[in-house]
Amino acid sequence: MTRPLRLTCALATLAVLALVIMAPVEAATILDPQNPSNFTRDGQQNFTAGTVLTLSDSSLSDYIAFFANDSDAGPGRDVDVVATFRVIQTAPNNADAGNRVVINDGLSRSAIAACVFIGGVRGIGLLSTGDPSAPASYPVFVPVDWQALTSVRLRRHASGDAEIMEVNGIAPFPRALLTAGNLAGNTRAGATVEFGAASLPAEPIIEYSAFRSELVPEPASGGIALLGMFLASCSRRLKKRCS
Image (cartoon, rainbow, N blue to C red; front, top):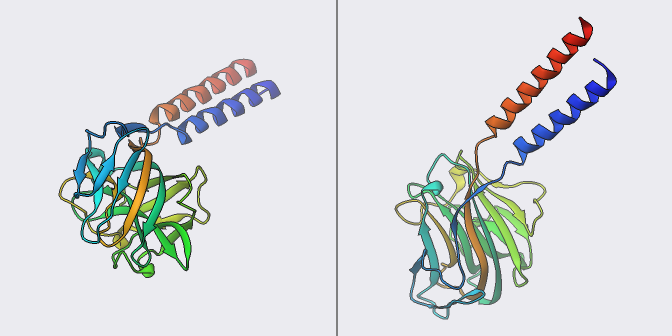
């Protein structure tokens, strides 16, 4: 194989592999902050629609959150929720600052990323099976000041594991992953995606500027097939040159 042909094949291989790795996710459930009518309100505390959706929880015995039925959130699929928010203020319940985003499989477990205080530090924690107010219930923790505008991408893997994929566009290191057996139970019957001030004792005010769920496609079999066809073409061209 000549050097130009080897280089062309190598570059094409890298390009197709990049397409496989970076296959785009498919948006499913999307929040419109000015009209959250595709979500169901949960709790009786106040919310205000607008350029941001403001949730105001001023009760120790009530809450304000939203959920949407989403079949993609059921077991056996890779699904993300991407939320952009700012906690304006909060009266926390120990570690629990009151704000959560959730992927609920509707059967046995939920991936829950919550705004928490751990050791006096603000961050996003993955809720395990314990009391949501206890710091030990968040074995996975990523420091971030959620009183500033914060974006988080939470994934529930097909295996059932939960992972914080990105905080403000940066992947945590080491990985922020909580295995399926350590996840909190399902939040309600039926697969849903959820967000808001779902904690009873905590009293936050939160602005949500964006929330969406995304089904993560399986590895791009089409890209792999394309790679195979191109390599076969390289092989045919090589044989032709050598004959």
